[in-house]
Image (cartoon, rainbow, N blue to C red; front, side, top):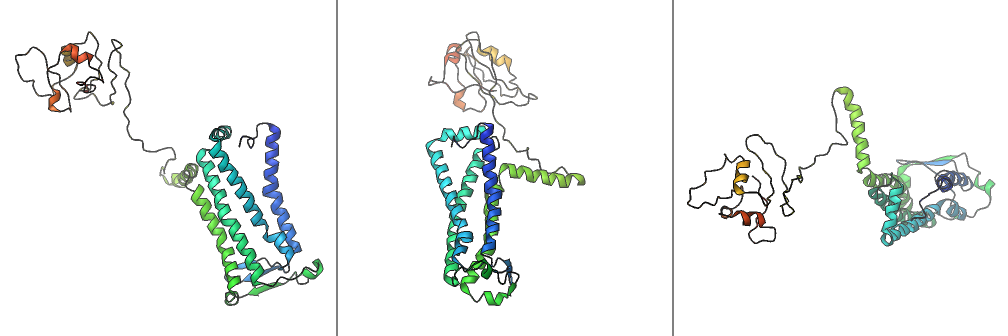
Length: 325
């Protein structure tokens, strides 16, 4: 996987040349060699349309029918090697994704899934087509280009009622008809719902509805649930308690988050907060004030001393968490 990442300018140029040969030159050569096996200009099938009219010779299998199998097997090998390299060397995949910013992890796995779908779909279908050609039509010998092109300018018209009577020809034509839509659906299922595709959909909708006075959906807007953020608190000593409090409005009642230090007293804590919304503290003869806990169980309101209040930590049996009023 690491070797497949072009690092120098020469390697990048070589990668572009290889891609051009595969995507441009090979299809042109494939179209050119069809001239040697073409018996007529084309045939018109009812309910189907124009279909290439190649002569059923041995040369046709090597120049026309075998290439989908070859390409499918090549994709199978590369897909298997890619999955094997990912399972054995996941760090190299991270390096590959870091090098190519346009390639994300999800896009990489979608490309691998597309290669696997091509393996499972293209190769078996090509084998089936070759079997139908070999069993439903007689194989004629290749006698030369001149003999094969005797009726090159002719166009045959086959009605739907006629070609549907031949079961093998009907299966072959229907497979050729529905193969392309099936490939489109598979490709859209893998890439049509991706994040970058949804962003392009939003841009297209905005371009249409903005002239009409509407804002349209935004690709960047996504609802985010509120989260509790830690507030930085000043501690009087190293033994202070860490308090996490959510931000809330200060109107009406006050939200207090504090830490206990050696100089902190219960009375100062109570004076620092607005406790007007709490019920009055019951009178008692004890001089020890009560600590008010909002939202805790009734057993939480019990007399505590300053030393036990400030020294209890998370490991102490009586510790009940930070106080938030």
